[in-house]
Image (cartoon, rainbow, N blue to C red; front, side):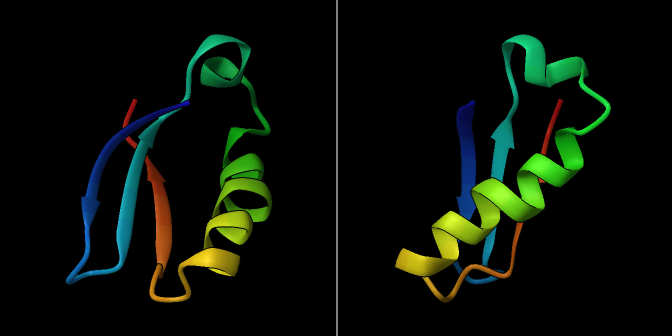
Length: 53
């Protein structure tokens, strides 16, 4: 995963999934239930994590 951009005012984190995750049909679930959940534990202001392929 590569961090592309953070929009603090909107609470959006943009990432680029790499390797096997880039084309995986479960990538959206990985973003929501893995990455987004983990980031929210430390940064509660985050509203969403978006994949920018």
